[in-house]
Amino acid sequence: MNVTYEQPPIEGKRFYILATDVAGSADFRAYINGQSFWSHRCPDPPCHEEVSIPENVAGSTLLISVKDDLEERELAFFINDDGEGVPIGTETRELVGV
Image 1 (tube, rainbow, N blue to C red):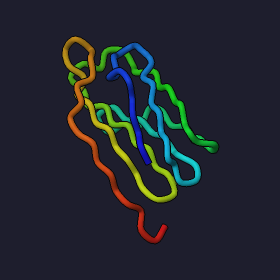
Image 2: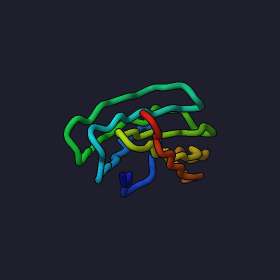
Image 3: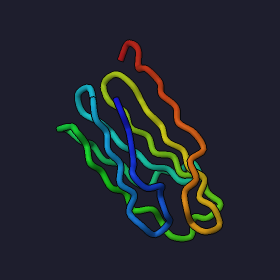
Image 4: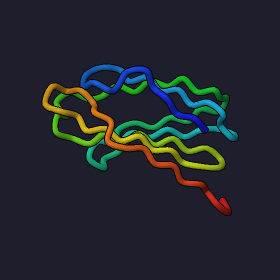
């Protein structure tokens, strides 16, 4: 599965995510400092999703998780003092025996 975005997230704005080469359907989840604030299921890939980033989250960590039938991809961002998301890592986990 490929998970991409054109622009990094910005607080108070919409963040657009694209998931392609998805096995089955895809489940999207978004977290600020570990607290879930958005989820969505895309049953018919490719998936063009948008999530509204909350206001007043500077200094927080934003995690976007996308899970299909074979793997889970995570995108992590630090929201700086200007409210802009700075990429801090990605991770991919294969789902074995699911």
